[in-house]
Image 1 (spheres, rainbow, N blue to C red):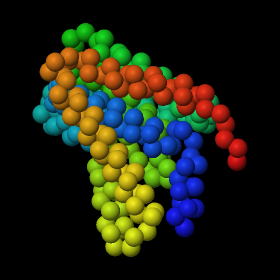
Image 2 (cartoon, rainbow, N blue to C red):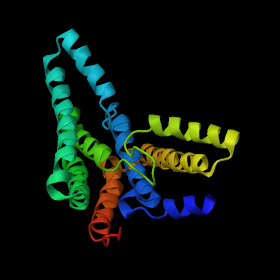
Image 3 (cartoon, rainbow, N blue to C red):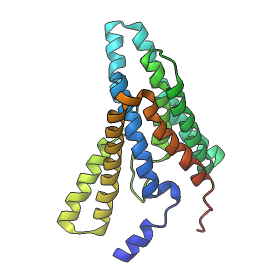
Length: 225
């Protein structure tokens, strides 16, 4: 059983391998923490932004309501693109384009002038939505690279199940999700530590990661079925 599991876990394309996802979760931790340390806003998820939007609606803050609505629209646009374009372009081509666009979006945040913080973070909302819907499976596990709550939950459940039943699949689940949480956390710590020193340039590391993975995934030979 263990040998079959190991063989299965190493037969995935590059876009679903653990090293790829660890790089993406590291980048996700940096991008997510950037919004928090720079502006006090988590720019890789919509729950907090949506709550702020309804707060602005209730309080009659028109400017904040419009800007929050814009970032919500960017997030929805990212999901729409990631849902439609793989069928039009092919999965691998879309993944390659997605990473190239994410590199451009990250660079745009670095180069943007001193404008309203929600406008500065808008590209990260689009980036997060595209990546969330495009890179979402790692070696058989539904892993998120830009969020962390479900990864923590799944890692904990995998650990509990492995302790109770000693099944290799449970340990694999614990390992995949646990390492995703670890790399996300490392990215967040790096961002928090480096932002006071280099500011927006802390996003250069995610930019490099997306730029590096783009040709690797695009040029990977097609696997025989």
